[in-house]
Image 1 (tube, helix red, strand yellow):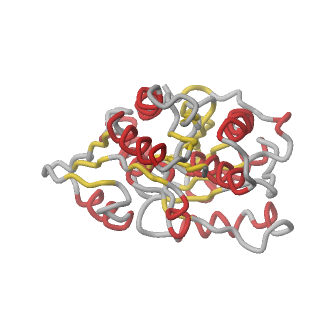
Image 2 (tube, rainbow, N blue to C red):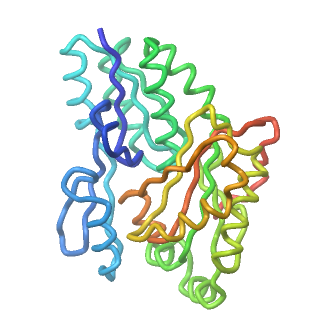
Image 3 (tube, one colour):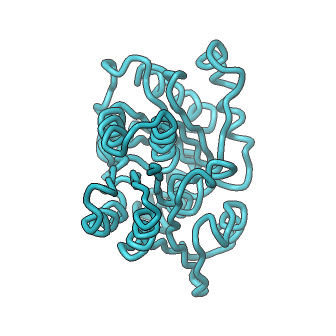
Length: 294
C-alpha cells in the first residue's frame, strides 16, 4: 500500500515533482469563451500573454467533487491511500469539494486544508512529500501538516493595482491613485485569509518592505521547505529582490530558486508580483497584527 499525494493546480507544481503527485487542475475561462485546464493545456507563459491582452479578467472554477471522486477511486482501487492538500478553504471551495468526495473513502483518504495559497500551498505539499518518502502514514502526515501549517508564512508584494480593480476588489479611483503614486501593496496570508501588511511607494521600497516583513516573522528556517515565486512574463524584479536580500540567505544556501505563480493567483494580482513562503526560525516572534485586506 503506497501513500499518494493529491493537490490542486494552485500549488503550481512544475518539473519532475509533477510526476510524484496527482494534480487536479482549476479551469480558466477567458472572455472569448475559451476554457483551459491550469497546467495541462495552457502554460504560465501562455496564460500571462493572454491575460495582458485581455480587457476583461478571466474567471477560474474550483476543482469539483466529481474530479476528486474520480481521483480517489483510482487511488483506492489500486490499493493505495492518499493525503489531499488544497488551497485555503477561506479563498476557494476546493477544500469543501475534496471533503465531500472523501466522505465515501473513510480511512483511505484524508484532506488537509493548507490555509495557504500558491507558494504557501506548495511548501505544505513539499512537507507532505518529505514525510511520505520517510514512510509515514496518511494519519501521521496529516497530523504533522496540521501542526506545521500554523507557522507557515506567506509574504508578497504586488506591482500593480489594475487587476484588483478589474476584479472589483478596489475602486477605479484607488487604482488610479495607486498607479500615479506607484503604490505597491505588501500582503500576507494569515489563518488562511489575505491580509494587508502595508503599502510601499516604488519598487525599491517594496523590496525593502518585503524583506522587513520576512524579518518581522522571525527570518527563514532553511532546514524546512521554502518557496519563492513571481507572476508575469519577466523575472527581472524577483531576481532583484533576491539579490537585495542576499544577507538574509547567503549563509544558509548557495542560491534562491524561484518559480512562476500561475493562473489561479495571477488572474487576481496580475504580473509583477513577488511572493515568499517559509517557516520562520523563531515562530514565537510571529507578528500577525495585520489588518484584513477588506
